[in-house]
Image 1 (cartoon, rainbow, N blue to C red):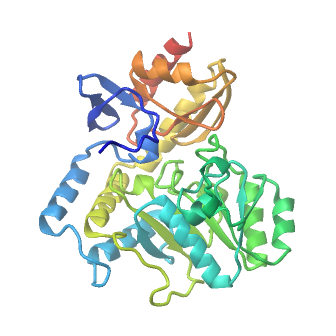
Image 2: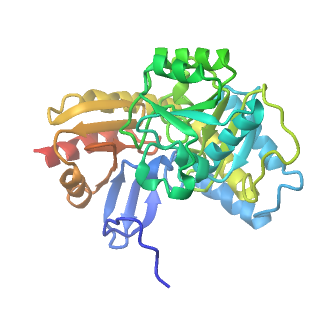
Length: 374
């Protein structure tokens, strides 16, 4: 049997990682400025993280959600405290797409409506409802095209209000920072107006913090820069540092009932042990603060590079837009300067390094980038 070939691959076989560095099977060391799509939050192979997973799997790797799991309760308490959402409930799942899927279902259960407002350039996942609210026709299969979603331009509050006035919108879903769409940050005033409009029409405001959450923006959630409190928040990626886990944070206005949501692997013992270690390391090593400080330095230095057409970002979620196609820039960064970066939008190089990125490593990246651009 061979792999189903859907991923365009770089000819690099990564076999080892530590902190913000990875190594290939030939022993070449790379600076990781992408963290595997924003997944690596506390660095590769953090000793506390590896110890927590090893210890848990040696005790109990899995049992079903039909019994008490005190690791879930402990993780819920920690997550509520570090995020500032102690009065919310949490439902643990396996991924970001599954988190968004359940968030949309929960909203529809709550208010009985079925239409969703999403935004141009949005990406929310590849499962059924998640792909319907993703603005990319290429990944919406005919079976997913159920016309539940109306897309509007991010920032156009009037267009949102006109759709809400029709009375059939269950939810508005928006990313804390658009990742795949080109690292685009919703304006704080727009988010505040959006929250007001949703509350006035019994519409659920869902904040997708799957990529921008878990400290990446320099606050635990990116929407916290705007001072709002959404009805539902979805999170994944950095919460597990590589171990699959996602979650839905749910405001007190929602009422649970037996069988309303369900999952086989969500919130399993190994996943909870991994996420608990991630949150503890983030607190102990002040990684949210580091993301803010190191991100500010990177934005300051990158703004001086004239080849960058537009620079967008917050914390350690940064997009560099160029006039020309970026394929050759990324190729040279990887194979000549040994730096992993990502891509998003059109001609945008995306930086999503581990939150442990040091100032020295940030300075080293700037040097290597300048060599490529020269």
